[in-house]
Length: 311
Image (cartoon, rainbow, N blue to C red; front, side, top):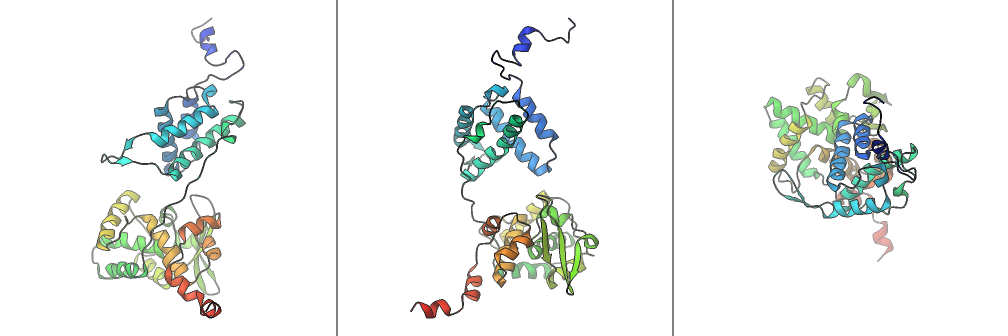
């Protein structure tokens, strides 16, 4: 027997007497996270789940992937006391806890399909998605103030960030989609009007959004190329702009997409069904989360019929 041969003791760590699997589950999980074709932002979220599983410490082998341990992990992430980089306590919402399970479940299901575990415990685990929090957005007045800010600015770097945000706001494009925008590739003309047609990087879903006159102006003054350095620097800049606008919420790249849904589209009477395709949502339920009906949309479309009927 050479030095690479497995001893009986080592072999028992891989297979139990009843045919179980005592291979190192966490090593396999880390390898799958690294090898799956994930966007880096998504991979980062999966690694966050992996680190939580490491702190939990009970998923050592494949035999440990049981319903009992999953319920214990659920309790662990609910009660774990963690803090931000600034030392502020983190309280996980039900939606956040659901995301931990959603990521972990995909690997547990893969292990089951590969025959590495005898049953999929997630088939018997009861998990609630949780309510999504409100998606804040700029009002029409705040958006117009933002436009004036750009028109009055002479700072080249500031203008680049302002224009990128406004481009997102008037197209509804997510940061990654807007960053990869190519005028020659993504512009199509229908009945004399230009539209941006593409597939979302995050989901692969199709989307079509109009090139509004203000969007055209933004493209023209940027030579039809929307370039920006990094999402981190962009969000740092937006934080300062949010303070200038007296926003009651942190201004981030996501706010542009929310503002497109609520203020730019629904505020002008666009239906949720059309908005769903414009934003590239798989489900109308996602659109409804983004698209909180603003007051002006209701007042513009309700008419007098209800008031006359219920006197």
